[in-house]
Image (cartoon, rainbow, N blue to C red; front, side):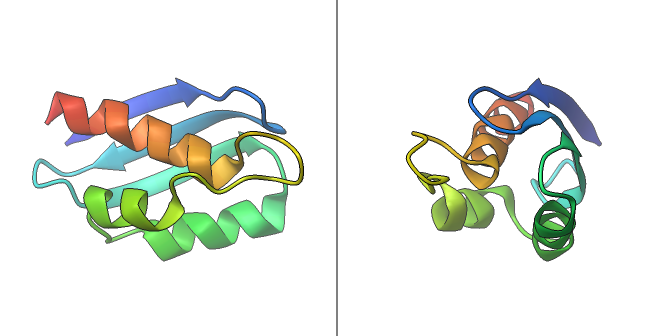
Length: 85
């Protein structure tokens, strides 16, 4: 298992906690702060997915006029986690 706690930048959430198995399958995701309902949905949707698949779907999403979003920040966390595999 691989684990990362990623401090977000530019979003309402402040931290993302991600665990994957050694094959790059996401086991759990939890956000600290942010829009609770939306982020719970994202966490459930990405659980069991391959890291690369999630990155390809969510990277670059923006929140309003912000240059990033919680899904985009998740991708940044996943890139760091992927480097540990």
